[in-house]
Length: 115
Image 1 (cartoon, rainbow, N blue to C red):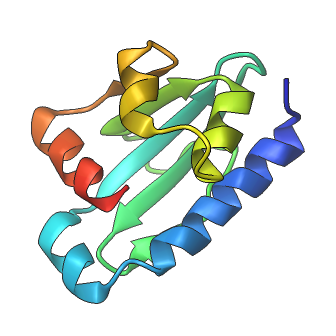
Image 2: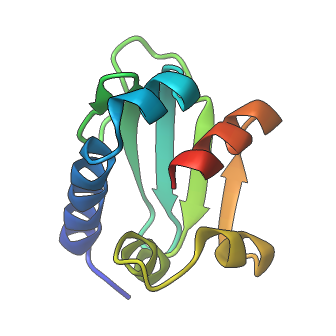
């Protein structure tokens, strides 16, 4: 089991990786969405926001507007770190039940093209 700090560092790395996606691909596939990433084995949830200009840093406090996240991920700490480091494929993790995503079908298809 990883620590909250290691998960936070992995999410920071994910934000950096997202910055590497071309502006053209972001324009085609990104719509603004609020994100919630629940780390089930640590009992912590990180909140972020995806938009055409990038991915905002994740925080441990929900957004002030109180609106729920449109994309919700649930996974274990080690799986988060493995996925961000490219050691665990998102598709395999989903099919194997290691990652749960609660989002609309259109959001899932868009995210798949970005990951």
